[in-house]
Length: 265
Image 1: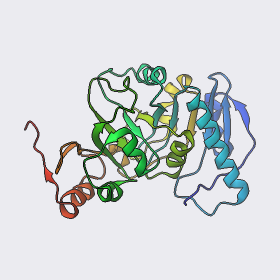
Image 2 (image 1 turned 90 degrees about the horizontal axis):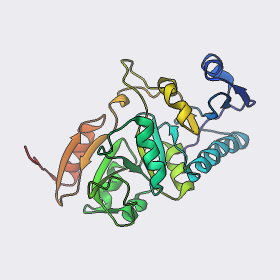
Image 3 (image 1 turned 120 degrees about the vertical axis):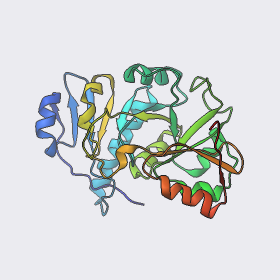
Image 4 (image 1 turned 180 degrees about the vertical axis):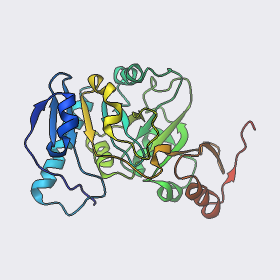
């Protein structure tokens, strides 16, 4: 399993501005004025951790998991962009996500799980497991029919649900520790740079319990995940091209023989 290279340093109480100036040597920071914990981790590609570094990573996971278990909303990195997350089965936490984003209540939230088998708990899967394994974990959101196990207050206006397994060890382990799906939506604001970083949404920090800062996420990931509807047996429909369109279509058509569903077009 890939772990993080976690730079261990002393926790310090600072405000947001001092965090921005001095974040290079802070690992766990309490924003004193905002009551928001900023927990720093290195990029998810880091590995070869010492036992002490692994324990530090576990502490960040435990703190974030505890906040989620208490019904709080957190910000964290994925393999595409930073997201706001809460426990999907907690209705009040879901409403809080909408409030924080100022988001229309009819715009659906996706869920994030840690393992392929978790998808079967919350979705009615109409494709082969091999197809799921070919696309996940990765920068793809699969839209499937929801199961009755999923919180009825999450996207009550649709029978479908988008599900993700990000190719990001921290996110996967967090979902495993929580034992519940996480409702997930993008955290970053619009920007014109090629990377997204936690500092881009500092205006949201006062509303969050924890911000997990994994540094900038680069390349073309600002496009977000590729969203594909697989709810119709033998068909697929691209809802959002995202950052993995060509690779996704190659798997769907070339390997598994699915046909594109034109939908209402």
